[in-house]
Amino acid sequence: MTARPKRAWRLFRPILAGATARDRATAALAVGAATLLVGVAGVALYGDHGERAWIVAPIAASAVLLFVVPSSPLAQPWPVVGGNAISALVGVAVAHVLGGGPAACALAVTLAVAAMSLTRSLHPPGGAMALTATLGGPAVESADWLLPLTPVATGALALVAAGWAFNRLLGHAYPHRAPAPAARPPSSDPAPSRRVGLRPDDVDAVLAEMGEAFDIDRDDLAALLGELEARVVSRERSGLRCGDIMSRDVISVARDAEPAVARALLLDSGVRLLPVLDGERRPVGGVGLRELARPADAVAAVMSPPLTVEPEDPVTALVGPLTDGRRHAAMVVDGDGRLAGLVAQADLLAALARPAAAAAGTA
Image (cartoon, rainbow, N blue to C red; front, side, top):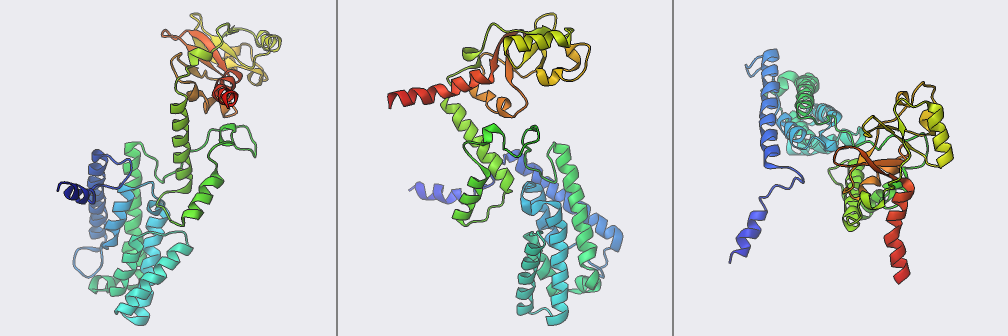
């Protein structure tokens, strides 16, 4: 008898992935504050006499999108401003031609959705904006053709400005940008870690097969799935640690060493990276032939920042950093931060290939 109430209760559970109770409370307060800001600005401009619209209801719906799901493609600045303004223009035009009956309202919403789709400004409150402009009323009719510009566009711009300030205060990027891939030398090829496993064309193919539209940017979706894939791989191979595969006999140089000395060590030993150490054998950087190609009096002037890990860190944590085209090795440090070993790309490759080789041998 208790199963049905529990099932019914699930209907009221929040459906936003990743949103905490604190996030929801903060977003609710932000929506209210932003609506107040737009309203106060409208009253200051036009007065509250019922003769001129100083705010339009769909702006509140825009605020919900902007502050609750700011990463949504539908909540970005152009959809918020353009979608609302274009839809208001469509509504005013339809009202002038057909009046405000049911057929006119339906046509206005239809044309508004089409216009927003064509201008890449699809914004759900735009449908309500077109309906508001078509139905009219004294305040809306007094604005007439100025309605799309003011108060609609001006209110939407104020809302976007509030959203930018709010997200900046929280340390979030708005307008939203998908995580950028690590910088690599100029090349048309994807990073080595992206040449296997999940690829962008896989995302496109699955989306096409599902035939559904999702309220998430495609690049965000690809990044999310890529991180999930990496986490699954890490869990499956989590037994192997950096300390298990590191080289302990590491060739290094002091930070005040001459570049010619470092270059000779690289060429004689066949390694691709030399750790640069301070007086207490703590890594302060790394040099390879690429760094040494620049003129300098000491390696400290051309060294790159060190990539450091601890012996207990999982080997899979190095897959991304050592396949981005910029680094050739990771420095393993002990509890005091001193150099304990080095994990080169070859060490990582051998470690990751071991489970596959073992499986092939038992097949």
